[in-house]
Length: 137
Length: 169
Image 1 (cartoon, chains in turn yellow, green):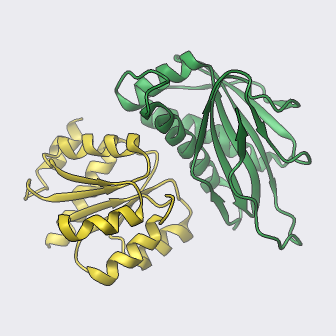
Image 2 (image 1 turned 180 degrees about the vertical axis):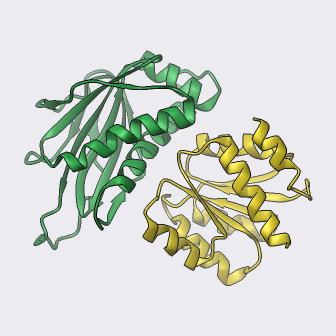
């Protein structure tokens, strides 16, 4: 994954805490593998929005990757609820929802970037890198 | 059935399999499916609601599913592993979600979380008035079929849209 390695240079803080929110363990594992290529290993996982809200207080994530369609609490509801608590932490929506109206809805709710499934490891690494660079600027 | 609701699935299968698994897929001649039994013994089921209603089933022979899951997750796992249905479900979710994004016009469509059924001879209940189109597919991991049973919701229909497909196994 050469792209991920070059994007790793964009990640200044390798101790950054990342929260992955997706109801599919398979997807969380794919994302973990990309994060690990970027040198990020402090990872917490949540299986839906409710689970994530119960974990953010103790874990204090510095980057969040969130799916849209999940049981109990979907990603958009999580983003809206979390933005009431925290306006700073960058969030990337990683979802199959590709309609323009959905992307706009997510950005209005407070996500900083958007990745449409299916994605290559390179693309996800690139979006993580650019999201963190913009936040740091 | 409106072909505009079928062709996005063909593009989506090829896109998802090539992006996530670097796996080219050959699409064969679609047929109308008349029986409720799924073609093979592993089914990833997604319900659609909103302006398009119905269900989509990715139906795999067990061995094909095992090979695909190995490629998709990078880990070899048996069908009785708890992560096996999760991987089949995520693959089905990606194919349906990606196809939904390609529906033309301003259709608002929601997809359900995936359900996965494993076992020989199981059936998936479908609305009787919606024809089911089976798209046979072939790749290096084996053959599989995508069974699409969807239709545009009549504009007059005001009752709540059906949720996920029901599966019985």
